[in-house]
Image (cartoon, rainbow over all chains, first blue to last red; front, side):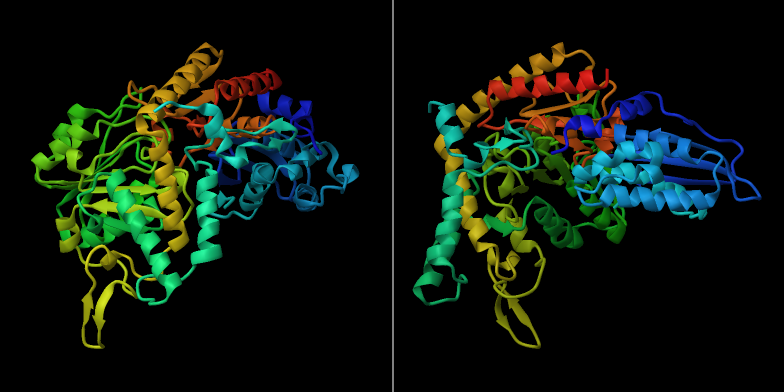
Length: 151
Length: 406
């Protein structure tokens, strides 16, 4: 059985208390909003993608639970300065980790620091908290006008 | 009546289990209460011995099912002091009951220029059906404000009432705040301008007595599952004259006397509003639940629940970083709060691992969250079977959560 400590690892607590890349990005050429009506999580993600398809800058703001805040913070850290193709690869890996079988260990090579969130799969009601930022970022990259909702 | 906590706890089999190796502490009673053995046994007995469709069967099982179903109607009439069983309509629950009134009564009585008055602390189920009615009819929805304690502003209420007000919809007890609203005076004020009143009793009916006639209530609605009964069944209790004048809600079997392709003659009350095969087992189980409440008695229930809330409130006030949401003078059973540095949703998860079941979220009352400028609250809600030791377990788990994020 996963313990609470597996979900609320020190890294997650740290990113909750001092989220990285927090705030509004101005100027930005992509942005999107995400909501998790279940928890009341609200997220706004801002991006600056350059002509070479590199995520030059990425920031987020909003309010949410520890898991959603830490997940967004870790995501922005992982993607800053990376090509958009890297987002697609990481999103796929992250989504797989969050919904994989309990026994399957996270692919730390593919995920890096993001693997600390693998504990969410033991807490089904919390998976949406961890994936909200990823869905919102996807909407921002694709310039979706409608806010993302997790349900 | 004396209150024997140990014997009450023994009546609820679900309470006696462990969650993640800790004794279950069930403090989500405002969402749904647990079911006593007598309700479980009643449902089982019905399906094992009496299951049949009601009202038109001439065989023994149908007669038994009909008798028990209709006996519950009388149990409910007497529990809520309604004037007649014709005033007791079975529904799928509070939400269904409100939609019935908004749809059937609303379509016949509310027009453009009219006003519907609800309060700021309503559950979404007592907001949205009225919004929908206003959209259809061109009427206007108005809101009675509340203060920081979570009490309705009665002065503004008096000013909002006018001859344009067709209906006032008020929650008897707020599920998000615990506030018990002063419905007696509010009903009298509404009647003085000719408005009808709907009281949402989903949260209140298991905790405080209701006298339809003494309070002169036009519509009272509640759900069985918050009163130790089954899910999927509830009741609309309304004055006979109002129900007689209302068009039917849904058409179908049981709500008719005679059907031809040219014309249908509707059935008499209460059947006019009970189209289709109802939740027969659920209704009969509801009857058992009401009798269970009666066997304890409201005097004992209210005294015990006040004691428990006072105990929990005292611990809450002493808990560093905890802010109570809802501190009305007259409240019951609900401790809603936020904790500095820990999001309610994280609290819910952390407490669950300690065996403590609470609710985190907007409690289907988003305008209440907007009022207090919080995205969500954590809510512990108490019932007759909860103990002081369980309240201690709640606060021990909260300490753990606070330390984790310290």
